[in-house]
Image 1 (tube, rainbow, N blue to C red):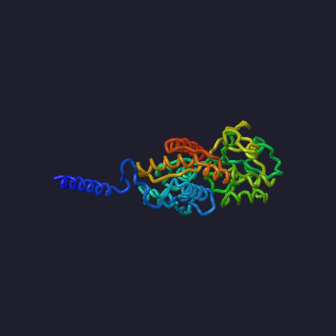
Image 2: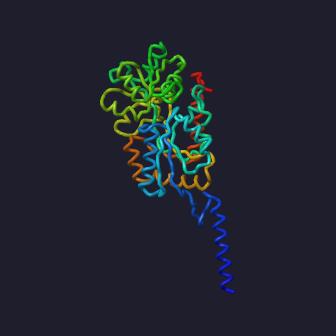
Image 3: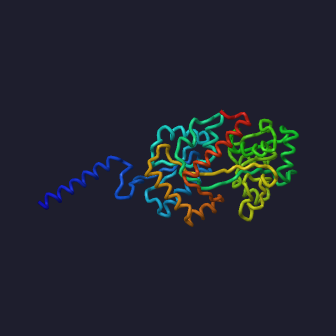
Length: 338
């Protein structure tokens, strides 16, 4: 009788485990989720070497080295349309793929809102998991430029907008353009009157500045540092709310301290699919919160010249909604919103 009872219990347990296995990623053993149970892919929607690529590679490297993630992690580069090509594929074909994450920054908002070359998909077609870092925009001129501060530049633009050439490393209506026209817009200048020339990347824009093909450029502050150190350019203003920390960064005045209320955060964050499972979301929220506290991650952020700025999924999603309003306002002022 005891043998029959034991066999019945064993059979019942095996049946329960079999039924649980049919639920795929929702399998749990005790309180432990089975996610992840295969390799994780992190997509950089760009070519190698750019900000998204570096973020994805740093993210996966430190997670693996610290053993916070024991499954294999790979980085995929999927360039095209400033991220729009990837988003079209991801939002339709991978919307429930828990094993594929991606990194992005403000273009995921901008591309969804602008009229030309827009994407029908934006951050709302994903699950924001965490903001990892922050950077700020910079208004930059040659070291020997006559402009010593932001206001002197804005005054000249106000007098004759077409006389000043503003350059950036992204297309009209994209991030560099918005960073460049933001101070002017806040200063009461019609942004549609400003002469903006786009180049294929920040380094090309800086080359144009140094070659006297532009009077001023707008870009992210981190990409200007080597040129500041070499004495080739000077930063008139950064779009941070207060002066940045660090021996070099603290020398750059903010637009705000010069009486121009122009703030813009260039964040980088991690996203999952729109229909991400609860188990997967919980896993990444806990794992990333541990990642950002490790010395390895802090050292990596410093090495890359980034500013650390962690927001969990809920905080990140709320912040994205705020920046979406700011971007929409700027694009409307330019006549470039869809």
